[in-house]
Image 1 (cartoon, rainbow, N blue to C red):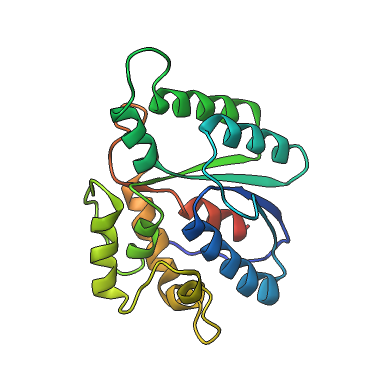
Image 2: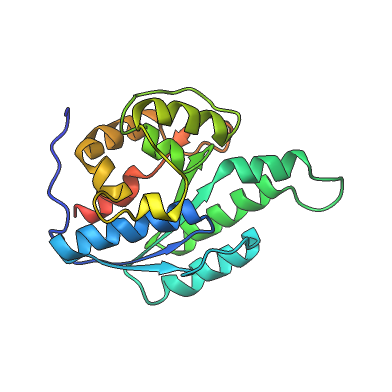
Length: 210
């Protein structure tokens, strides 16, 4: 790797997550299982059962958790927001504009909040463990198709993600440093170009390695 990185867990952060997808929840539960056991990393996942909450509800939850956690990560799949924006009827604020406003408020008010954007979806992070791509996928199905070429047998099910012999985090961990570098190469969320391919999951692992 081009840059040196400290080992995960040098400190013991109390980290909270706000998310709505089962994929994110299962992956983070397995991250917690592995890293909390090996490195004593303390993680709080909210909500425990992801629900299809409005952006406004997720924003409020981030604000609440920011008051009593060292760091809060709001992990968002942008393909959902972009789809809702395309389908948005005239009148009222577009979902993308709403998200940009919430993101700006959070980053200005809270130094301990990280907004992690994945476009199109969280599975893009998995794919980056195997390939360095800047391809802009129109939806998540294309990402999953390419992921299966590299991760044989991949299934978007709780049983697969939490397999006792090889959970999803354990499967991907050997290529974690590659994924981090590949995510960094994509750059951060850009208000001027919000539709570009991106994955900001490297921010989480930067925090864990402090």
